[in-house]
Length: 136
Image 1 (cartoon, rainbow, N blue to C red):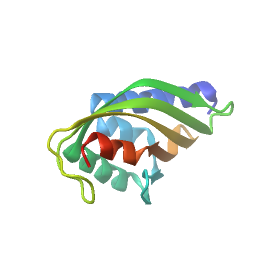
Image 2 (cartoon, rainbow, N blue to C red; image 1 turned 90 degrees about the vertical axis):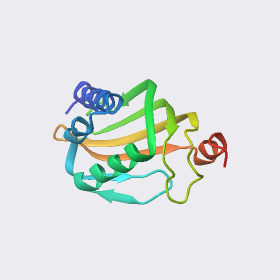
Image 3 (cartoon, helix red, strand yellow; image 1 turned 30 degrees about the horizontal axis):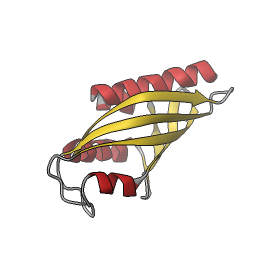
Image 4 (cartoon, helix red, strand yellow; image 1 turned 135 degrees about the vertical axis):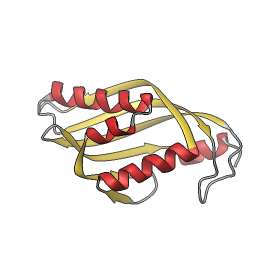
């Protein structure tokens, strides 16, 4: 992969996210993808990522905008910065009670890529900011 291939892969990944196309997102991932969850653990594999997406779909409705993508020259690493616009639909374990609160917050992600797929996804956002916005 080179930089152009990496950027095309990340563009496809985020287009699938915004379209709610979970299978399209999963198609961008390596079978043994490592997913580092914000302020959480690391999950491995597409099945774990699929379960994560189902959980997110149940608890949140999100759209990303202002997406800026970056990739290393050889295409093995990438990053994204964006703004999350969301609605908190159902209470997520250990978090404040949901009642349709909306939120907007900056976020970012880092990626490792090879063989035309994403090998690692690491997402960061300010959980304290999110909690303040949903009324914690």
